Image (cartoon, rainbow, N blue to C red; front, top):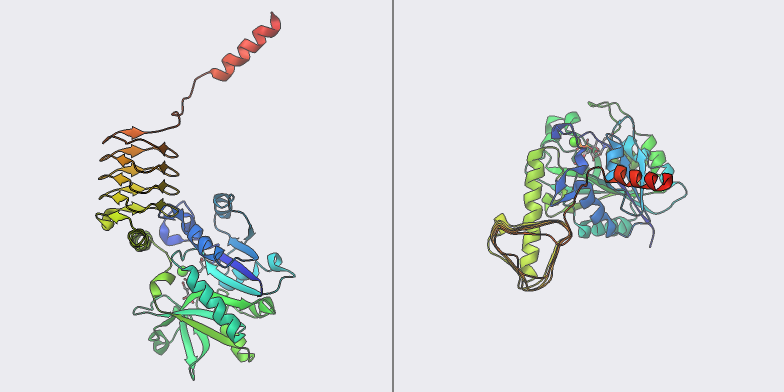
Length: 360
Ligand code: UD1
Ligand code: CA
């Protein structure tokens, strides 16, 4: 098995979010978008993982600082996706194997899809394998141009002819590349196009003209490659994620009285025969034992543990990091650690005591 090297592009500005927070740090189910991408990538057991940051890059680096095994490279200025990948060259110097390129703003991509992409790539011995999907509304995406069934190139929306815009097979922006010769080919990409950017999809045409094999993997469910550019898309993909998560919980034996109003974050584990009533929120990292009952509108803060089989009453609030062993009455606040107390002047009083001690 050859090594897998994951590269995540996350340098873009995300202008349409209209936010002081970098796009990839906006959250779905309590986890930053880029956290979802890295969680999927983790399933490939990559030898290296490189994140390309740029716009507010230090915020992104800081937010991911507790995740082991990540390298960060900076792209400044941001001259396009091909230029972004080139920034990862030093991080991959002397390496061999397969590069899997991901976007930091495509959070629903399933690990199984990445496995299939890599399998196809290895089985065909391709230089590049492109993940594609056939969609009803291809607007905004790069279109897959085929000739005799084979992929011939990818044309961006802004550069496409009217006929090319009719193509409904789109580039997901996710690829597997043979690392051997990759960066030399990427350097051959020019920026003579409508956006004056270095387009990574141009690599396909370059490889094809050089007689190298380029393959595609077409996705059955295009929803998982949806990217996020706006707050509306953030909400829509958040709802999709929640629906999938809730269906999984029910398949695992949890009762959800009203899945549409049940908010269970990523990294939450719920035991079988637990009942979640409408309007319940379980924040990230929480563990709920078997046979618990969480009533209407109860809110369970992050990293909490409910030891089976407790009942959390209607509208109750369980603070972050609490370990709950006994029932919580309706509308009560449950906390197990003491609340933060700020004692004014404590340090100066201590210093004063110490200096009195010395002068005595
Ligand atoms: C890209 C593809 C398009 C594809 C679509 C899928 C190009 C030129 N086009 O378009 O064919 O259908 O993705 O979603 O690649 N980024 C950087 N540095 C840059 C530019 C972008 O890191 O200089 C990052 C962005 O943060 C983002 C990713 O690359 O995570 C994709 O960039 P974006 O500008 O969103 O590309 P699209 O126009 O969506
Ligand atoms: Ca874009």
